[in-house]
Length: 184
Image (cartoon, rainbow, N blue to C red; front, side, top):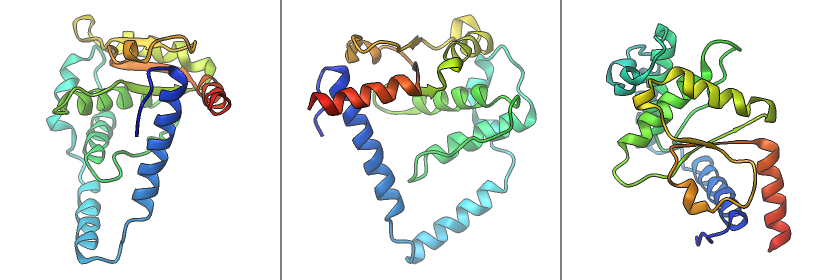
């Protein structure tokens, strides 16, 4: 799949790639012995609460994590290595989802052998600034990831690759997608 150097083409290509991964994951053959064994290993591992011991990123935080945040952050990192490449973090309000998600995503990104892209954070328009504040508050200044708020389509996509985290609203993403469909 070719990625053009414009925001419109890149966003459209990212949508297509995401949907293709989802289609591949959903349409996998689940009747094989190896798949059933894999599911058994996943079930055993998800029951284990000692996921946090291997996350180096916890040392880079200003915030002392609660035990459930450490465990859930570790599970997110572990699940990112599975074929589906992730998980849904749907904890109740106020339990530290933004901290868990950003720490786990950065841990996975730093472990990648090649130069990875940015971590996209799509949120409600009213939470964009909150996400930026959370990153600044929870990370020690010397370890704070580079982040940017994407709020206009004129930013060169090559520039975005210099950042660890790109924060944008869902409405902004929808408008970019609609514009890219009209553009083609």
